[in-house]
Length: 258
Image 1 (cartoon, rainbow, N blue to C red):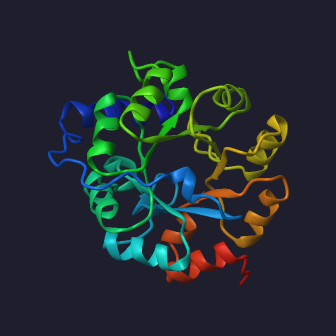
Image 2 (cartoon, one colour):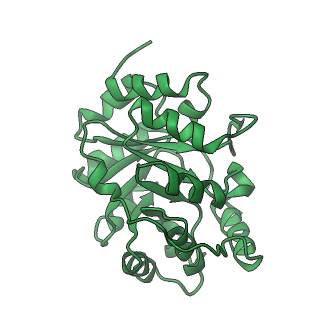
Image 3 (cartoon, one colour):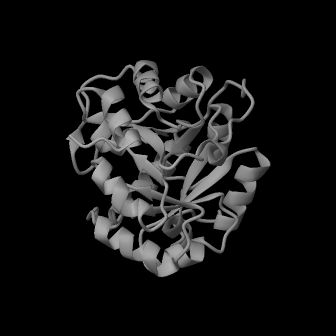
């Protein structure tokens, strides 16, 4: 069984256990994720405590403090992991940050149910991540990709639709998703390859909606993708594992090599 399929089964378990049943109502107007990503480069900085491949990234978390450090370093938006099983994420972190920090937020999870999309809205997120093969392979059961995108839009949420193989990327570009994520990490095997992502983007020849995800460690990595027209990057591990989050974000944003 692939990592992605296992992660989706865990997501269904969380849905059935009521993990996403937030009581609070949305308290702020939605900030546009796409509207915030106008710089070249634009950075979506990701808050997570651990990853399946690197293990623990930080031993403790003060989510508001970390989010502020990212914002002060120049982050254009924030991605908040809400999967507690693989990333030590928290739906409460998403809600706290969205209601406190004046940047758009992306709910990052393995979304298989409308319940999770509703939770994103209640937590004041600006957007959600959807993963193309979850829907193509039926891991979302009776929820289709079109229905998930339409439902998110009906709730005032934008959609970042992710793919990590070429065929899925081509099909993703035909949808109404607001942004298209190209993940350098294969979610079946967890193998990481910036070279594969580079080839995928080159094959489709469209970068207007593209967000490069995973594997960016330096300003040099960003510069390579900027050469083919990519200007939006979602970066997590290299920031969260840095001793100085604000400085690391600034280096990535301003193209500073160390």
